[in-house]
Image (cartoon, rainbow, N blue to C red; front, side, top):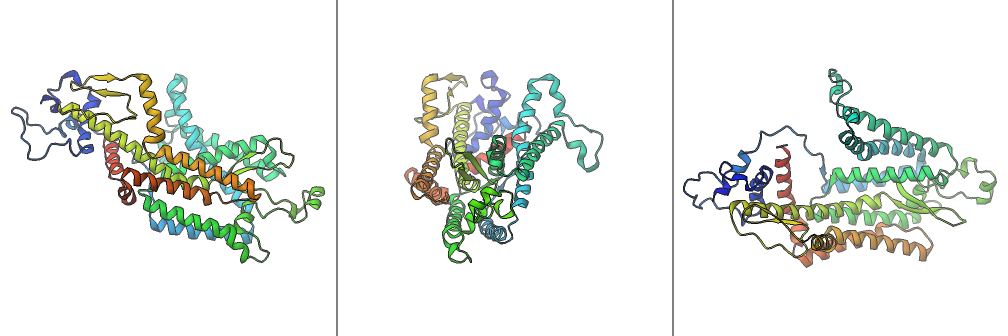
Length: 441
């Protein structure tokens, strides 16, 4: 079969497809020839290695930065979160937390929003192409020549918005009535959540289960159990979340709102908020960032698993087309809109059917879609409980059973629960493939 030799492969497959085909040998165990397989006469090249040898010299690339959390991280998170909550409860340093949060979120906005935005504009608008160059290319002191105009401008933009938000938070009596304030706060919260989930990962549902069960118990204890131990019967979680709780004398504070004891009750900024519309009592609907990022770790793991399966299926198809093997039958609901025939030619499928299959696969074919629906269901149950009980509810009380239970049920139905519990080999293979391909460009 001449498809294994890049010098004799001809124009049937473009170079990038041949590179991908080389790595695809790792993606399919049954598609890889064994060591004892006979090599056809005149062809002394191994099928998997030859396409890689035809690739250009590897370029130096920065490794992807992420942290895989383990059991010690779970234990440390619970201990430090509990300690921080009690420190805030007894020392009431709520404004310090607001300042630290505003500064941290400013950097997150620069990373998540402004750097990609300015990078996109520099590619589309020629007069902004200088953004990718360094403002001081000849100054090596403290790595100044490694910074780009994009990074500098992104930091300035992020911190300009963050400082303006901090000014409103620290000077206005009720900043949540300011539309600019709560809109920026939601953008900041979304940015820091995206940045967190882009760096922190779980590698299996054993770690995810330990983390979610731990915070599930932590939330119940801090909300419902701590009133039994505090002097005035206050819930530690509710008191800290509302910056000291509501004022003791609302009538007095309505007349003298700037008195010290009256300037409390505003929620800490580590949350998403939307003011209630057409409600004379004011207030808003709140969702803490912990209720987003902690279940989000499990949902992000599900998204990585689905993406790894799609990539490995694609690599297997390309590899089998390259070595001349039989093409696997495409499963129902595949997200790949095209296939490759035995000659390496791309065959476009019916576009309408492909779109329907893509939607079906995203919603029901993997783990990410069902878990996202489960998260929405758990969140709806939390809001329903708030409406029925007329009191604040820990959202994780409903989100953890919905998301973790949904993942376990799906894994059991698909027969993959054991693999999910210990760590999926598909993700590990996909990580190796992506790292190898990234080093070539």
